[in-house]
Length: 141
Ligand SMILES: [Zn+2]
Image (cartoon, rainbow, N blue to C red; front, top):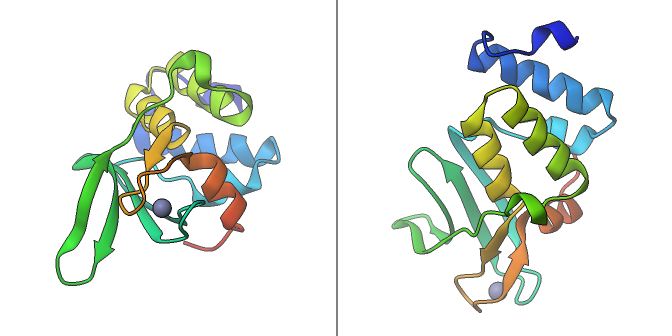
């Protein structure tokens, strides 16, 4: 499988291989839910006030927001990406792997996913990946 990775692989091929590698590491949760950060939304409940928060990590923005069916994502707050020193465990492995293979957009998305978001409703700050992993079982996308 190592031969799949490299600077020459196209992003879409690389991402599929990346998910396979996550599954091989028994990180089934992230293998099932991780997007390639071109157009990704993650939904979770604020750990403090339980309001549903939409986390967007994509080309159009990286923010937490309240999703309003009429108005779209309102009350947006910028995400706080994790620095390399703040990453640990699976997040750090994912980040290191993407950087090593030259996929900086993927690495940057991972830094945001494993970083912090602010609840637009109560302003509490939480770790996005921790809350998301705790609240979601692997599901079909
Ligand atoms: Zn809240």
